[in-house]
Image 1 (cartoon, rainbow, N blue to C red):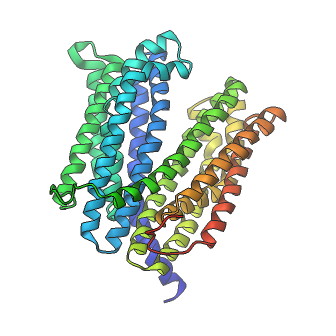
Image 2: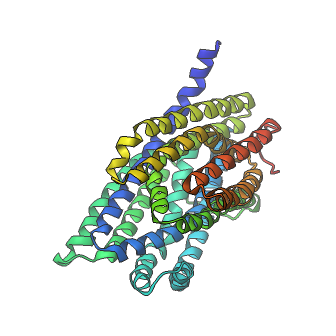
Image 3: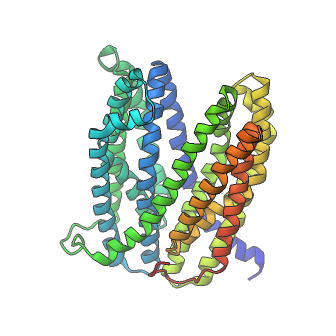
Length: 447
């Protein structure tokens, strides 16, 4: 088999799994944009309230996503090994763990919402509207956590189209309910409360569809044997999900710290950084989709004992992701002098956006390597090393770098993005070193 045939053999399954996952992420981003647009019609206090609530929810998502990642890895591994009983056992235990986590976060949200908002510096106006909204959307956290886990289970079987289709239905209903509950109920609308109710109803609908699919595919079995607690299965979840959640929490809290530094640099810098996020979102969607596909394919290959296949998928994914993420960002960089004018007509801000995207284009190969190798190592059940690397990179390089380059040397946003680029290249080098020394196995051990 020549190199072109080999590349096609591994490239096509990767892309076929990645595209639906990318589309799902894109749909979520579009709904987020529409949601923000509707809420912006209510006033600045409502916008600030939802923004603060979402900032807290991002921390929740880090934990829920880690549980989902563990589910994807384990389901993919045992699917590859053709061990259907173990797959069903993993699914039942993942649901049990998800329910416990969802209820715990729900209780935390209901009783400590005010404390969390005050900790983030909310003023009295934001407190009045934000707490109610947050309690509506976050108290039923069980539905958020179930969305993450059930979707991850289905992707772990190698099916990324079903979560995309369900996401399409759920997001469509979300937009319709958003408009009805915010503006139309009783001809007066419920405002921000309506936005929260619409979000919860859409999530419940999505969870129901995901459960129906699992039951239809006979992956969800309601028998005493399947739902009997098994310590060894739960330990696998804990050993994967805790490092994965800590890795994301290190990232999230580090972002909060250096975001505070960016705010101190002034309104233009802060606004430019926020606007640049609208551009970098597209490369992130590409990376997320390919990471999902890579985790599934590498996990299934390891479960089947096809270690050369796992290596091949990992290498192809690194190259493919690097090319695609860099290409997307480079295209955005070339067109940014024109597209940036959609958001602002301030020439200083536009020039800064262009410069930042230029730096980000150079950083994209490293960003892609970090994204892919984190997924590959987690698929091989080495979740601890990416956690250590993220903690080091975010806190010792990125955060300190933002202060030194951005504030001390006065480079502003250029210094911020240079720090981000340096952090990504250092983390890419460390993860690649780990990858080269990796012992490929079915992964029933931890490191």
